[in-house]
Image (cartoon, rainbow, N blue to C red; front, side):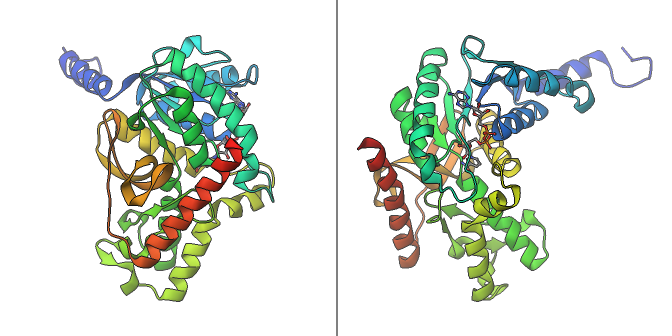
Length: 332
Ligand SMILES: NC(=O)c1ccc[n+]([C@@H]2O[C@H](COP(=O)([O-])OP(=O)(O)OC[C@H]3O[C@@H](n4cnc5c(N)ncnc54)[C@H](O)[C@@H]3O)[C@@H](O)[C@H]2O)c1
């Protein structure tokens, strides 16, 4: 059957719709309807990664208002993911994926670790609710200090490591790639890179694995320029906080979280730098640290171990120590 405007037929349209539905899960919850959370929900809806996108926040009216606003953009943007907002967990029941962005953000002059105790309390209570309402969910943690909050979420949910993964490396790597592309005046798409380690000043950008369409970056940029880019990447979050004065980055962080969501929903088996719970990989156990991960159906499918230079190994060990320190502070 032809439409009056002559476009397509019903069978064709039905099959397009079906294939779109196949590429989505039923429900994704985003906890925290602040800057990162709301932008994450919007990106998930615009990419139609779930039939329902639920935003939860303790602030009354905020998730409801933002969700309604986003839903009203659906006819314009052309997505059918239904976005709703709530202050409770009933509506989130049975979520396939839960992205945790609840917490307070860094203020100027405040280190990520200053956030430690407040955000640990928030992430613990959120994770306990997730355990009850969505026992089979895959949890992606965004709240800072990231690596420690992942640990809190894993303990409070009791989920296996495949289902608790932290977002930081994707963001740090995106910043690194953006700065490299800018310095070389090339497309960001052609920069392959990985930033490992904890999400903090001790993160480890791997120069030895940085390439531009396969060409080692060391052949294209001198060491001084590269070192300056690595330094700027390490301070990428603080640079934005300094500009904004209140609040911190959220466009790139939400894009990072959604890239992980997409890899899982579409079973893309992407290799992305994520905070994973290590069980001996890279000589570390019992902590979350940024390492190359294969993400697909079920969440974390594999932690990939790559060879590191002696300098990179030492930096990673230092980064692991910087994650252990706040964990001890939290336990003490
Ligand atoms: N991992 C990363 O790379 C990365 C990047 C950017 C931001 N972050 C972190 O993400 C978090 C959110 O940042 P933001 O800019 O969106 O902050 P924001 O202040 O805009 O939003 C945080 C939201 O969490 C809500 N909230 C507080 N307690 C809650 C609870 N118990 N349950 C549900 N919601 C609760 C607040 O009401 C607020 O709306 C911060 O911890 C920030 O440091 C991490």
